[in-house]
Amino acid sequence: MRFADQVVLVTGAARGIGFATARRFAAEGARVVLADVSADCVQARDKLLAEGFAQVIAVQGSVSDQGDVERMFEEAVSAFGGIDVLVNNAGITRDALFHKMTEEQWDLVMNVNLKSMFFTIQAALKQMLPKGKGAIVNVASITGQMGNVGQSNYAASKAGVQALTRNLCLEYAGKGIRVNAVAPGFTFSEMTRAIPEPIIEQMVKKIPMKRGAEPREIASAILFLASEDASFVNGQTLAVNGGMYLY
Ligand SMILES: NC(=O)c1ccc[n+]([C@@H]2O[C@H](COP(=O)([O-])OP(=O)(O)OC[C@H]3O[C@@H](n4cnc5c(N)ncnc54)[C@H](O)[C@@H]3O)[C@@H](O)[C@H]2O)c1
Image (spheres, rainbow, N blue to C red):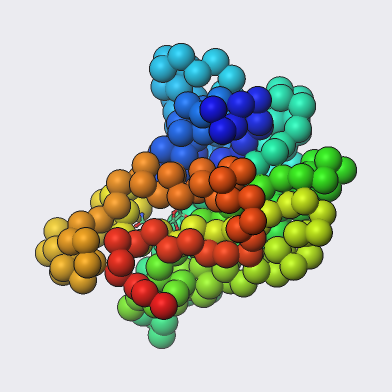
């Protein structure tokens, strides 16, 4: 039970990687806050309750809205007394070739994937700094590392997540707080479900392991970075991509 009694807030926890992560934290003893813009976070919480994890709550709200983020943290603190681990997992895509990309597509992706972390991490630090400890794991992407046609907004946001992760390590490592990132490769989830099968086949051919990831395989890496097993890992981005991008 690596997270016994710890309080973990996971954003984008209604499904996919976020839900798999919330479930793993609950299974390892954590009290878990499932935060998501979708009302499905309530069903996600109910699934975990039905699996016997009693210490889980759901908070609906958008990570790109500061008021919503403040409410997520207030509800977490009032239910469980604080926050020990923050997982910034919520993310979206709005793909278009750059010359056709609208300002709305650019702003939406930047706001949900990157600016959100300005709100969530400031709120988390309010809880973590007085205690002198805490762990933050940000979800980046292989696309932020190697690029992908039609995803310039997404790639820029995810590269920003890595830069932010490094910078926050420099600022808070001395205060007992570790900030790391996971950069998943192709993972089966709602986000990738819309990709046509022939494109998925082409993509999988480029992965040395010849398959995509299951959300739980990304969750494992997130839990490692949040845990004491990673006590001297700070400011890093752990690539979880089946060998697709090596650097
Ligand atoms: N699936 C992949 O291949 C892949 C690869 C690399 C990185 N990622 C990243 O992993 C993370 C999770 O992706 P996923 O594949 O599970 O996607 P998903 O679309 O299945 O899940 C994303 C979750 O985030 C929530 N969300 C969206 N906007 C939000 C907002 N404004 N506020 C709060 N919650 C919001 C959604 O409702 C959803 O529950 C994302 O950051 C994504 O960019 C995914």
